Image (cartoon, rainbow, N blue to C red):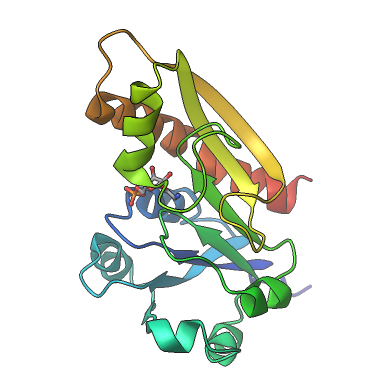
Length: 196
Ligand code: GAR
């Protein structure tokens, strides 16, 4: 009997910056027969995530703003790579409605706080941690959620908390949050796609 070696899921990871989450996800699924990271997408030509893609021989796509927000321009590209799931890992542009409609319940995002708190426009990266500390929160955490047409709004899939200590700084909180992201993002993707 011939074994079907084509992965069930071909994921595009969208990232705007360093891409340390993308790096962890790529490593986690490296030897998976069911899930492959087939494309790295960025809006930023200088993004560190592009080096990570090159290092791992994963094709890349740089988005142009006008085209991205113009109906359906990139859909044929995603189709050509047979992308059937999208993961946002530090991607800063809002996802246009046409893409959400083309990938219904198939786009997820990670947010570095406990949504619905500290989400929305302008709430990304360090801005989130600064706001959490300014409001003297006792805890923060991560949220993995489906993407809908509003910022940081879709149905929540997973959350994990961490303490915000007395002397916490935005940088130390960012480190804690990244640790949580590295531990949970890839396993949650696997659970969602394969074990649901
Ligand atoms: C991550 O902490 C992610 O949660 C956050 O950006 C960071 C990207 O880090 N995303 C947002 O703030 C989206 N609103 P990375 O580039 O090292 O993976």
